Image: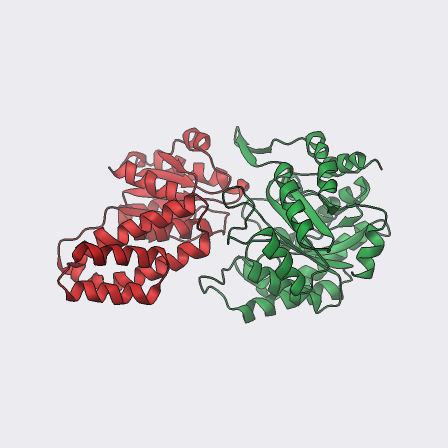
Length: 290
Length: 212
């Protein structure tokens, strides 16, 4: 196992952070605006989000670089600035983290599909290498490849991130199939674990897609399939509309009630995805008896 | 003979056997089966089965795309004959992801299944402003307009489209359907859409129902 990850998890589960998108929207990110470009245009706003998780007690915070790959950025005409946006994102999180938290930089999906021939494996590899290298250069402590729907793309991203020499986590979305334990492409937790481990992941896991209740089963199945540490970031339930506003129904307290069973199922990194905030992080920490 | 070969074409599409689909279609046409019979008796039933398998969680996105590829291997052999005859599409559907949202996968699955079910589909693409929906709808005169969104933050853009059509007095000329991860039947009612599809197959069923 990677040294950093071994050291971190020696005393039990590590609490990561909550959602960035929800938090940036709350602070004025507009519909159709590129969230990652805020790293250049409004770093103070991005830092506020990072800071709220550091203050809440997150042992690891992520970065505002989820969509900062050349494919997604090209939809905003920003593909040439991919490295710059990634470097700025890491720098902002590091500034907020100081010596209190570690910074794992986020790499999300390309938005292109290999299976329909939108993109080649080689093009994906180049894009993820560009992103990972910029994150390493800016001083990320680790890299989290997250919200992946296609295990082939996830494997390419993990391998690209591993080339930096940093510890790498690979995390996928399980929201499809009869019991919501498959990715959109039909990959199972076992298959994800096996393929991501082969690609060199130092930890594997699941994020987004559903509420925390559904994560217990997925986490347990991953645990049975690997010795690697498991990374879990569930949503605060599924989004609903209420009077034109988006709401997530799972409260921080309710979310935290499912944390002990998630630990029981093998989770070693716990945080939240869509709809979660610093309140959820505080409740997770409380649920762990810290 | 005719119905056997049609059943074989249907199975080949469902089982994603591209080469078989093509060979069986040639065989059917050579033996005198009409293009329309291949379409109605083999391909459309195949895509209906694929849609149900997808809805029930037995098929996943790659399976749907592969089946549609197999379908296309057959369909392109029928196209010229269908155009000569009086074959007409079941209806015209215009699809787009609303402004502020660049996600296209859900829309594209629906597109594939609608085409497979015999509809003509006009794809506007992603991040489409309300006035583009209006302008293109007036040009193309579709029966149905489908609005897609993945992001919760882009849901209000669906309402903007509905409101614009209402404000210009052309709302009643079209049926509107909505779909996407954050959307619900309740939201469809709230913004005055004609229906909501929980997944791509439900979307196809909805379109069929609205045009029945």
